[in-house]
Length: 419
Image 1 (spheres, rainbow, N blue to C red):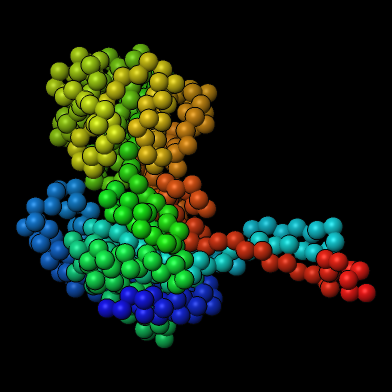
Image 2 (spheres, one colour; image 1 turned 30 degrees about the vertical axis):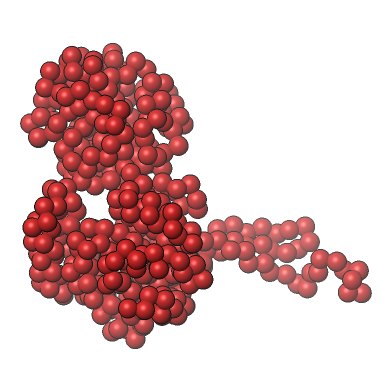
């Protein structure tokens, strides 16, 4: 496999994608959704092979959940492509226009980035989401998934490329790297004259490897150490709903809660009831001395527990004396992903929002809404925790950039030089 040639082919294909009209791109995305459903049996069979291999390897339960596809999840993948098609096209949009004193009209226009390399692990839905978002934004995409999902990724990418072929478009616009060696990633992320952006999505080890070795700009998605702070003025029933949904519905995803902070004034009332609901769902609690005093079933927590992204039915818990103490804890242990406050005090809520730099901050809403599809983006290519042009869930608009377009009537900078 000649990775450089594949990247060059993708760049050439990206130029054709960038030239498509909004109608043509949206038609392509709907066709991609159709081919996913048409090939559903083959895709699910490929996923079953991946799951079987992962189980033999002893892959942990949370990773198996990320890897698993079924008819419902495949239907959701197809619907995500349809939702992306229905969104406004970011390409060509004028975000600002002004007339300068000399009569020049200065516009800022959104344009495609070019070629995006997506490096990810055991999440086969990323294959479809990333391809659709990149094409919607007029880009080509190079997909390099993990070994655990290789059969699923091949089947999904094959279905999507079929839609390109049916419309006479170059299949290289969606390029899947089959080479699973770490060296293939290293070679890809050196191609700074061909590839415009790298987005790694997976474990911390993968992301650090990409960041340390890439010659291409990288948008990072580090750990999702997400917190729920239950304020003294929280509605306990509401807070418990947020806690159960955020921790137990899909513990293996990045927007799942990992730490619960409870104000001391409400801890004795809130924690026993909330803990009973968590224990009933198989959650292990690790708490500070005050938590362990209130909950004898909890295990003592270490500093490492508060910094951990468990991606499992494990929750770190701490009792805090104030909002400032909660903010200090999040600043020390958080990962700038998603933070949640449960409170009926609007002033406290605003202090929480403005006291954090996290990409997503929720007030009385579950951390599980920190997702591109749930926030109106159709789907997401990742959640950026890097403060660059994109921060938080990234949709199609985040895969474009602004350029200046200037309209004049013969204006020159130095009139005296041309007289």
